[in-house]
Image (cartoon, rainbow, N blue to C red; front, side, top):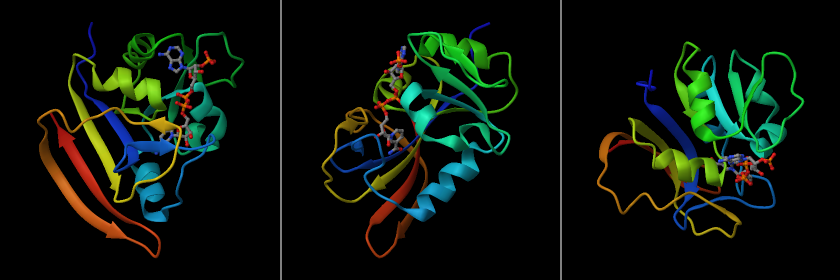
Length: 165
Ligand SMILES: NC(=O)c1ccc[n+]([C@@H]2O[C@H](COP(=O)([O-])OP(=O)(O)OC[C@H]3O[C@@H](n4cnc5c(N)ncnc54)[C@H](OP(=O)(O)O)[C@@H]3O)[C@@H](O)[C@H]2O)c1
């Protein structure tokens, strides 16, 4: 049966669409990191191999990780692997919970074009930041703003947005 639950894309993104640099986040924003952890705890997280390898939390707090890789991976018991995003979504079909798409770049590019329902949890970081990984252009589509909250710390100003097509 095709997946009927929304794909929840969750991302923090600079104004110039940068999401990563040198394999890491280009910022450390504790409030955003907490938001990300709380949203995804207990849920299904779909993520690319590099994100999986660099985020030990993918298998903590009740998360069910599905790692996308073009090659067979050795993963601990309980972690699932898939050769493509559609295969990962099909695997998620057998699991209870919400589906969170956690990046990186190609996974987001494919997920935002998913023909089924999607929702975007976007933390927009109000800065132009150097980087080498990007979120796809989302502003060329009409979105309904479901929620919005401003935040800031000593270094960054950001807006938590929940958007639906
Ligand atoms: N700001 C944010 O919210 C956010 C979120 C996520 C990531 N990031 C940043 O983005 C960077 C990591 O993301 P990334 O884009 O470099 O890597 P990634 O998506 O985590 O991993 C890339 C790998 O995943 C596999 N993969 C991805 N898409 C695939 C597909 N459609 N089919 C088959 N395999 C696929 C491939 O693995 P194989 O090579 O094994 O085939 C590919 O080499 C870091 O800098 C990280 O901090 C930021």
